[in-house]
Image (tube, rainbow, N blue to C red):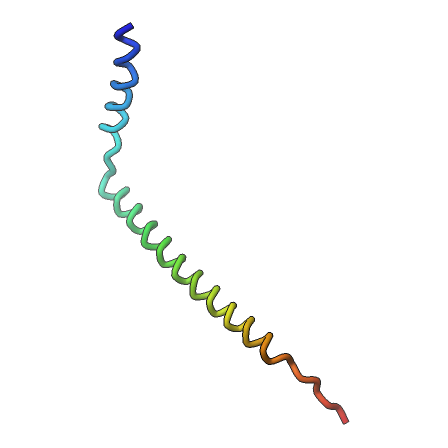
Length: 68
């Protein structure tokens, strides 16, 4: 019975001990995080620009052109 209570603890310790990253993995992870942050900023800027353009379009409806 005691073995059953120690098994999850041993498995958790083994899993935590093997979680280290190599220098290459750390660099790749850092790059991915930076790229994610960049993409989020770009996406927010795009949304703001699209909202502003949408607001301007609704305030200034297109005028009909007069053909002669």
